Image (cartoon, helix red, strand yellow):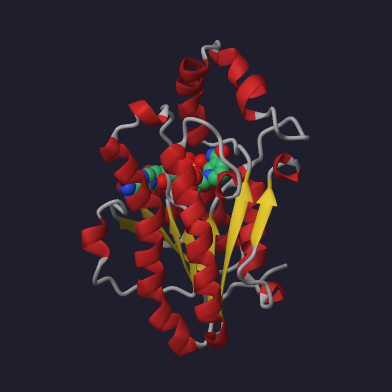
Amino acid sequence: MTDLSGRRAVVTGGASGIGEACARAFAAAGARVVIADLNGEVAERVAAELGGEAWQVDLADTAALADLELEADILVNNAGIQHVRPIEEFEPERFSLILRLMLESPFLLIRAALPGMYARGFGRVINISSVHGIRASPFKSAYVSAKHGLEGLSKVTALEGGPHGVTSNCINPGYVRTPLVEKQVADQARVHGIPESEVLPKVMLTESSIKRLVEPAEVASLALWLAGPDAGMVTGASYTMDGGWSAR
Ligand SMILES: NC(=O)c1ccc[n+]([C@@H]2O[C@H](COP(=O)([O-])OP(=O)(O)OC[C@H]3O[C@@H](n4cnc5c(N)ncnc54)[C@H](O)[C@@H]3O)[C@@H](O)[C@H]2O)c1
């Protein structure tokens, strides 16, 4: 059993899906969790249930994060969105939004948390990347770009943080059963010209050797291990949980 008593864990996008599962796992291990999310109402509800705090924040508003100081022993950069369009139809403003939310804000939160982590000689940065951090798919230019960037940011954080007791790692899931995936089924059907019922077998699970979605709790169990003492020598790594997708 990983014991996170006395640790403060900030989980972005903690009101839903993978983030919520991470918050639940960390709270069950004794951490005090901070649910940072655009959806303040749900963040409040989840935080109250877990005895933690809610932080209502728009993480795409990067200007507001520039001078932030963040008290965190564990930081999970998880908040994210998807947008499925061919490059020639991809709205530039949407590309920029995704880069701000999924690459610039993790940088700003890490930047805000490191001084405290360095002072305490302990820190765990866990970046929820994706199989799209190491592989590409058509029609996801912004998402794939942001996740590839996050992989680089995570490694630089690992190199700078190591001497101060701070680790930084990525988790790279395949498709996970969350609202983010449910919301993209219609878009995938449209761009691929197939019925929605065929999106799972013909688009999402084609590359995976195991033909099912990942469960949020499975991702959270890996995040919990990365946050705990047994992973002290694990840094700069990227852990796939993709049913064999990236084995190809
Ligand atoms: N679901 C998957 O298949 C999958 C696979 C690999 C990686 N991921 C990654 O996991 C992370 C979480 O995805 P999920 O599937 O749990 O999604 P989700 O939609 O269930 O949850 C995302 C959360 O982020 C919050 N959020 C969105 N925009 C925000 C903003 N501007 N500021 C603050 N919070 C904001 C939402 O309110 C929501 O609570 C994302 O980074 C995603 O890229 C997901």
